[in-house]
Image (cartoon, rainbow, N blue to C red):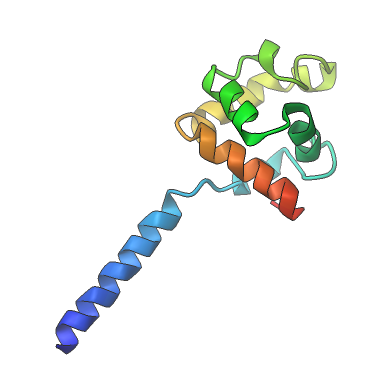
Amino acid sequence: MKKSFKLLVVAAGLMAVSASASAFSTAPCKACHAIDRDVVGPAWKRIAEKYGSAEALAKDFKSGFKVEDRKIASTEPKFKKQAALMTGQFNHLIKGHEDEAAKALFAAVKAGKM
């Protein structure tokens, strides 16, 4: 009985680790973004305001995240210059996780922290 219980606990722990590993982490985003101030990239509050919803941002991500479609980078020269950097990060971190990434951004803005 003890052995079965131990196996159950280990299995539950592995499932918890794998479930949390699939969640999108905003940690790498902190290098270029902050919630309430522009850094290398625009403040996430501004991004959230421009897109209005996680679904709208995810749609832009899914369409390929072209510079001309980005609501801030396409209109502000400061960020247009940084667009290639974000495209690389998008391909590395967000592509394939568009919905999760957009939801994480909006959740961070709502919570006021990344």
